[in-house]
Amino acid sequence: MPRICVYGAGSIGCYVGGRLAAAGADVVLVGRERVRATIGDGGLRLTDYLGADVRADAPFVVDRDGPGAVHDADLVLVTVKSAATEQVAATLAPVLRDDAVVVSLQNGLSNADVLGAALPGRTVLAGMVPFNVVNLGGGAFHQGSEGAIEVQDDAHLAPYESAFAAAGLPLKRRDDMGAVLRAKLLLNLNNAINALAGIPLKAELSQRAYRRCLALAQREAYETFRAADASIARVTPLPPGLIPRLLVMPDRVYAAVAGKTLAIDPVARSSMWEDLEAGRTTEIDWINGEVVRLAQSLGRTAPVNARLVALIRAAEAGGPRAWSGDDLLADLRTASGR
Image 1 (cartoon, rainbow, N blue to C red):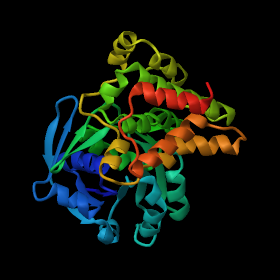
Image 2 (cartoon, rainbow, N blue to C red):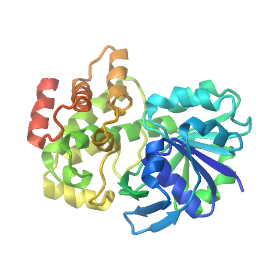
Image 3 (tube, rainbow, N blue to C red):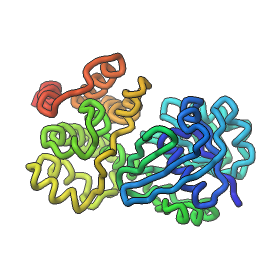
Image 4 (tube, rainbow, N blue to C red):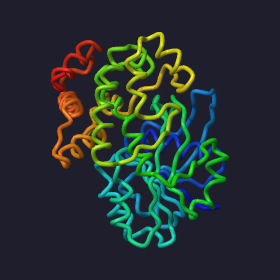
């Protein structure tokens, strides 16, 4: 049985690794001491919005001992925050087997490239987790929205596909992962808005003012990608260019359409909200910040996304974290000059 190492076992890593372990895969988790302390001796409990409820036990190795857990791994799933990618790559390089497969399941656009540059000769693939996972505490992790894990198409995935399918997490191979990651980034622009709202995702998206904030950020990003001649994959039932139009519709219209196209349960929240709650640095630079940097490289500006970066930075330092939809919308409109 191939050994799977999940490097960076936070919410996503524990959920994916736990589901694999519950289905019988040989899994080891590498993460921070605070996560292991939260799990305790009770193992993992993994639930989802469809009613799944499974338990799993998998060895948990704290990150300082991570290299020892990697040397015999066949597949390494990298789920660390984007800021730690270079450090993890340096850790993996001297201990990773030459025939090991590495898959980046991270936010942002370039983490697989960073890993690949530091791991020459290894198979390094880009991947994307579309669903939300909430850490409920005590080793319980809940998948609060739908979607299949998408991974760069490569024959080296074949030995592991059955394990993911058995875990209820079938892999969807893609030959356009750059476009997929850009599509995921458009959706992730809501992470900052949800974190600033301080309420669950479903409650936030049920309010038109918050959705208008997201529409402003998405339109700006969409225009920036188009200016860069960068394609955007269709990862939702609606094409990416039409999503902002749906977002600004009245609540009744939005609820009728969204209810048929995207399942989100009432407890789901963004990982950025979770980071702020825990006093951790967020991934804002690898989400909204990606749009700002790309716009700057094109001689353009992205004032809405730049403002969201600034507001999250302020929240990390103890600033406001309970914005009403109307107040946040007014602030973003002022920043955009519209």
